[in-house]
Length: 426
Image: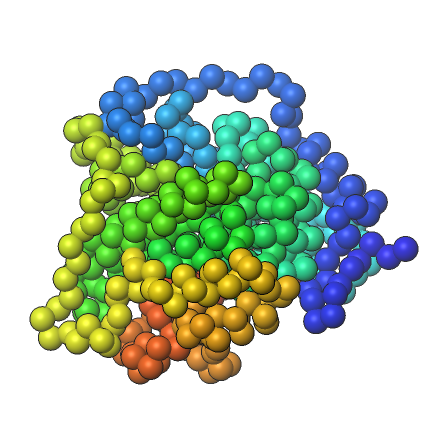
C-alpha cells in the first residue's frame, strides 16, 4: 500500500498512520529528551507585579537563545511561524538533517520531498523549544496547504502525534482552514486559528470551528492605517482585539464545548501591553518583552470593558475605509453563522457560497491571479489605494485583505526555506 495520499486536487502528503510517518515521528522524537526533568524557571518579580490580570504571557520567537534570556514562570507559551522558522534554518542549524530526512521520506516527487523536509525541520525545532521550556508551542504548517483542507488535516494529525501535550497546530483563517479546524477539534487536536485581524473573523471561526485559539495581528492593523495615511493608527489593533475578545467570551460562556481563547499578536512596542490587559493571551516578540522590563512599572488593569477611540484623518472618507468591520459584527454575519451552524458546509466551496448568499462575501474574497501577485508585491501592509474601490464595493475588507497579505508574506519566507532545502538535495 502506498504511503502517499492525495484527494482530488489536493496536495500530496504522507499518510499519517503509515510506516514512513512513524519513522519520521521517531526521528524527530529521538533528537530530544523529554523524559529528563525540566529545569525550574525562575519567578520574575517584574512580570509578576505588572501582570495583575489573568492574561497568559507567551513569547513570539523561534530563537532559543533570545527566549532563554527572558524565560520565567510567568511565560507559558511560544508562537512560531514560517518567517521565524526560516530565520533559524537560514543560519545553517539544520543543514545536516536535510539528507537524513530525505532518506526517510523516500522516493517521492521533488516538490513533495521539499515540503516534507520543511515540515520535519519545523517539528524538530518546535520540539527543541518544548525540551528547553516545557511549554505550549504553536507550530505553523507549510503555506501550500493553506487552501487545502485534506492536506491540512493530514499534516496536523502528524504534528499532533509527535507531541500532543505541548504542540498547537497553526491553521490560517481561510475557508479550507475553517473546515479543517472543525474536523481537527472534533478529534481533540488543539488548533491556533492564525492570521485573524478582526472580531468578525474570530466570531465566525469560534462559532463554526471552535479553535483552541484565535488571533488579532494588531500591530499590522495599526501600521495599515498609519502607513496608508488614513490616520495615526493609534488604537486600531487594540480596539479590534478587545472587540474580538468580547465575541469569543460570548461563545465560551454560552457553549460548554467551546473553549476558544483570544490571542493578541503582532505587538510592536511595550506600551501596547497594558492596553491589552485582560485578553486571554498576549504573545510578544522578545524585543518587546525586553523593552517592557526596561520601561513598565505600573500594575496592569483589565481593559476588557474598554473600547479605544480610533480617528481617521480629517480628509479621509470613512466609507472608503470601512474600518468598523475590524470590530463590529453585522447582522448579516450573524445570520450567516447561524445558517452555517444549522447546515454545516461540507467543504470550502460550500462555505464561501454560503457567505456570499448572506452578503458577506468580503470575508472570503475572490482574487484574480494579478491581484494575488499585487498583494505579494506589497508585503505585510497592502497599499490601500490599490484596493479602495473593492472595499467600497463591499467584496473586500481590510481584515480579509490583511489575511491574504499575511499568507503571501509567510509563503515568501517558506519559499526561501524551500530553496535552502533544495540546495542541500542536489
